[in-house]
Image (cartoon, rainbow, N blue to C red; front, side, top):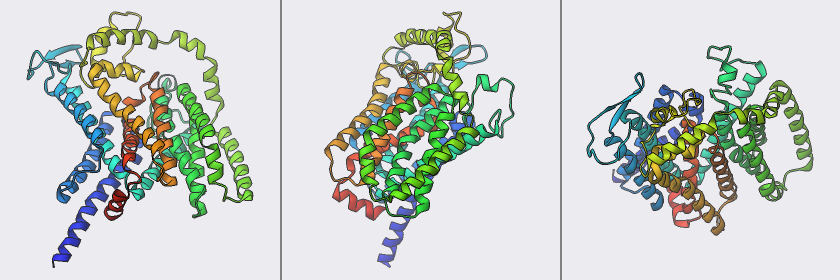
Length: 471
């Protein structure tokens, strides 16, 4: 009886762990279909799915009486971000009335201390931030299990391939709006959508985050002996993502994608050739011809001439763009936000009060189209430094591990540079847009950061034994 109870207990814990991990992977695939997490109900649904996954993971840890396999530095940084953000929520000084555009004061814990300018907005944002930080920690542990690292990789590819295919179908059929949404005469001018994203730049940033890992997966699968349909599926997914990026009308997304492709060609061309040396030449030739014909057919159907037309008017649109005066207004706000900021998620409520000083700057600015300035506006210099430590610290930690460790598998040595390249790409895009304010993109970036932070445990023989037992 004793042994049976032990076996049943282990199976129970393993089921909870596995359920939490599968739920996270499913959310990665589902999130972009929920309008990318850009509507109130979709944000709540994604929050709920992530909360359930993290809850199951925490319960499994408690029952197993063990600490998660998460780097101490990550725990400290995440803890400080949560402490800072939740203090701003609990010590909020007001709630913004969007109808009358006034701030109604509320009771604060410490009236003279810093607090959020809008309790409701900061509360909603911190619920999301808590879930995302939990995803970073959960993915850091998952990435130390080789089987689950591969499953994460496949989930990313499935997510990208599905969104890219759907967007191309819409382009090919001349859809005026997302298929299940009512069209509008001015929808293309105000919100040039792509796939399930209302704003094409968000879709472009999402596809760019997927491009390097999908390319890496195609290379890794091509060099292995396995079912031919798997290699074909991975290559097709890469093709769909590439053509989707080109057919999308976001110029910045295309520029970032061009840089990513160039770096990949320069950086992995020689290793890729060596890694794929076992593939028959006849297979490569036939595959190349099929690839060329497919690209031409998709290009014709997807009207790739439209993105080219947008590039022609770049200089005129830059001169007339309202983003430059908006940046100036935001800089003034950042100066007054100081060390602690106006509160997480409060940009949309606070910015209009600074916007009034520039009569020519009209419209409603929900996002600034410059993630770094918006982060400083909301989180201040202290909060911004903590978030930078999480994001750029994870990138630096992964680069250090990649350069120092020599006992990694081909899978790990291919995936990590691809993840790093994707994060650097979205960091560049964030200078002129707001990709890191979109939930589905935040979720994917958080998963990649988890891989970066978790790479410190790769190649460790003791941890590898643990991973095999717990997987």
